[in-house]
Picture 1: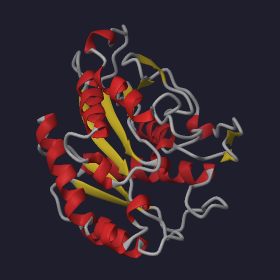
Picture 2 (picture 1 turned 120 degrees about the vertical axis):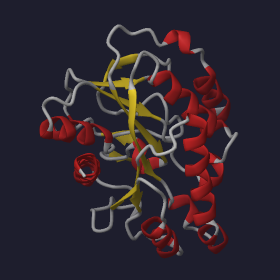
Picture 3 (picture 1 turned 180 degrees about the vertical axis):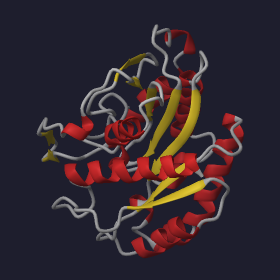
Length: 257
């Protein structure tokens, strides 16, 4: 049922994206649960606490499941990641940090696409998740919006077995390459998060892949050392804030280079 709903979300006609205020700077948020946001979620309930770094701002919008722009607020993935309860992720802290560091940056549009528990194979070319990501990105840039970067945080699900971990580099590189081709954005910056050291057996292999992959305009932010919740997999609210700031710093440094 969830996969069917994802297909519907990915295939809705772009004609529905008719909001008057269209952001000029578009950022794609993709991957699995830590990008979707589990900060403040315990026992499938979000505590509703929003840090000041994740506050609403009139210059920050999000593309909702109906493919229309609306003011962005937490949880960003509430109508996208349908598998679990969503809470605080890195997106709002990222956007606020960018604006705080560049007052003339303009409006920001966040495009949530992350779905918890997904492996890299579920993001392969032609899959439901891949098609949704491409479609939502294309809708987001209609009206003149520019895709500034893709923020990617995924890999926990590929750290469980050796086979998945050792094939991760090939599958991830193919995903990034296919995505740039299909979006007709051959050098769009991709900022990927390297997993923190978690309780899965082969997370070291996945982390090495994430830190060592060489592609043009592929940036790297390390989540190692960020505080995890009791499940030893999901970042706490404050860790999500810190991650959002790290992602923003990486983007801003790239822009100024």
